[in-house]
Length: 152
Image 1 (cartoon, rainbow, N blue to C red):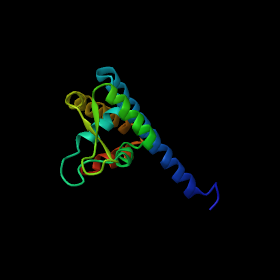
Image 2: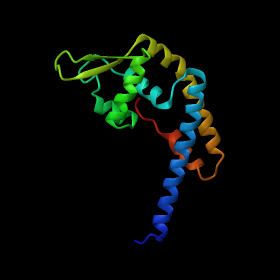
Image 3: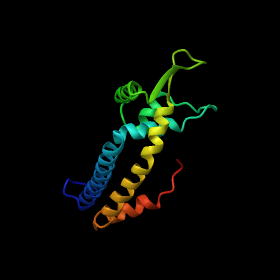
């Protein structure tokens, strides 16, 4: 295969379309969350991921798992946790069974903000997908996203 191979060109075009769709969605949601809740997409995602933790076995996420879930490096995730902790939305504590482990929980204020922001996030996502569906290059990707039924 060469750089001018039609299969590679088509693959690159598909990747560009996917990247464009992601960027449009993220920008639309970011604007809505910032305007109504003073939250970024990453902050919302972090609160959402951490709110799904539970006290059962394997219910609390290690920082690497959190970083993977919000698609950030561990250091960026730590900085994000610190910012939200400074705002009173998260709290950290030592793992009761392993003193080296540190867990992060969403505070009541964080849960309240997440509940308030969820309809904004969902509406902005729907608006962004509806707008992208009008673009012939993005419409198949929108249909693919809408057809996914992944566990929360």
